[in-house]
Length: 293
Image (tube, one colour):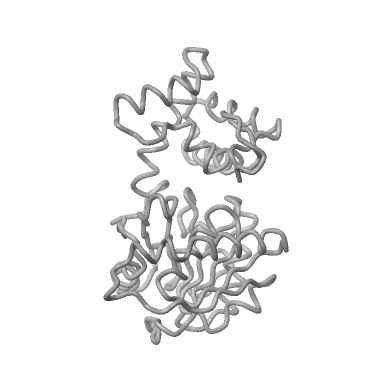
């Protein structure tokens, strides 16, 4: 049976699974563009923090949209379980930790409870959606939808799983622009997609020169800003993403490409083992104030 693309999109919710740093930002982007948004997280604290972030940033994001096309603000709701939030949605976006033991069973659940025409997207920054299909019966509606770091960057990479139905990526290419997003389509499956394949090499080299004692995080960031005109250097960006997330990504790249050196991963791991996760914990490669998160 062929897959029917979702209809009635304007009136159906977007569901975000995971209320962490990226999940709440993704939710804010869709709410600002007029979508009803539901966010799922087991943690009451994460749900509360995500709701506060979405409320605080919605109007700021709306001011950047085309006033002629912007839709009225719709409800934002939080839920403890996907089973309560997913039915009725046209798009479900997973933004949970970069671990297959979490993502694979989650996609199996989502495939069982989502509407027949709902799209199931992973925000994974390193896993191809084809790696998440072990418990999925309908791979034609699964894809990668990797957000950079909205609202600072509104880029989003789209990539099919090898069986994604015709028209899915083109539909999202059109629809996501309503929310101020800038979609880029990967033409074939790639670990790291487009940008992260390039960024991974820069990040790995930056970590290596610090691990080897050649330089410091501050100087690496400084020279990258000076020579490349970057607003923030690699170590600042890793602190913003979260070093636990960076570590998960590096572990995945090493599994995919076992010939890569491990010194960059080992340096990040030493910080994570010490509880230094970056901005969200108050300290990473840099130190931050108590309310930095």
